[in-house]
Image 1 (cartoon, rainbow, N blue to C red):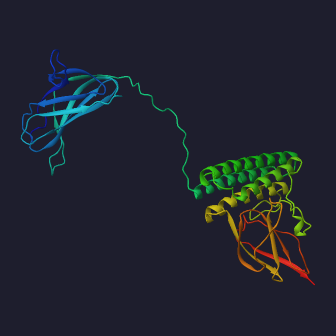
Image 2 (cartoon, rainbow, N blue to C red; image 1 turned 90 degrees about the vertical axis):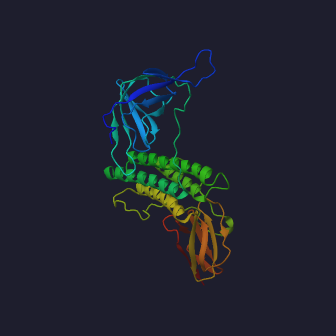
Image 3 (cartoon, rainbow, N blue to C red; image 1 turned 135 degrees about the vertical axis):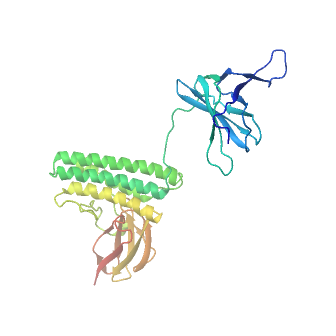
Length: 373
């Protein structure tokens, strides 16, 4: 609408403090100026050859040659007017340089889409950079914020990766050699270190340092230490013993040497299977808690014949406890840990200790077989 390619007068408005005067906001029109970064720049745009046909946004672009930087002064022009006051706030960290006016434009009126160009004379602004004396942080610690479910699933995945590396190594080195046992010992140390780290995070962040830790942590510490003793020939750890009150003769149950739901090579040495199985159980423990929200397992307890006294203890404990009811018990709850059960009934002999691994079966059916007169 008549403003394209027309000539406008462009003057810079610079802030000036006149000597001997109290008026500090007087405006002086010039064609070139030097300002500091962080100051505001005013531009008087005058002499449009035709008045604006509507209320619109109008602007002028400035560009420097080296480095290639641009900024824009923007203002409003009212319908019927031929001049406008534009401004731009120059950032404090804007690079220094000499900027010249390049072109101008007026935004389309309502109902139109095309911006109308305006030719402008060349005026020059020199921007002086200002040193930034603020002290800003230069480093930070980044930690992911996970729910308990996400935390435990991620820990489970880490152990799964450790077991995958073990499987790959053993597949390539299947012989039961001292070198293999040393490698397995290194894997066990890595697994227990991961357990210790998880234990610390679990106590501080999930439990907020309140109350005792779930029993499965101590269970796996004992199992990892037992594995390391077996692999390195170190003196064995003190094994849990059965209370004298139990009347049982079995005082220790060996660590599993068979895979627990894991697809292992038939030729894998027993030591490797034992390490793989305990790590897989540790992995499964995290998954059980992530799924249920609690470090417990449920069991159905029966005996043949029924009416037997149930005694139980965690593998890491010294003494057995009496369960509150005799068999049969349709739904009993226990702490998530490897647990030993003994069934007793007057005039009957039992088959010994029943060991339950709740990590691979969180809802086991526990059966006590008694031989009665």
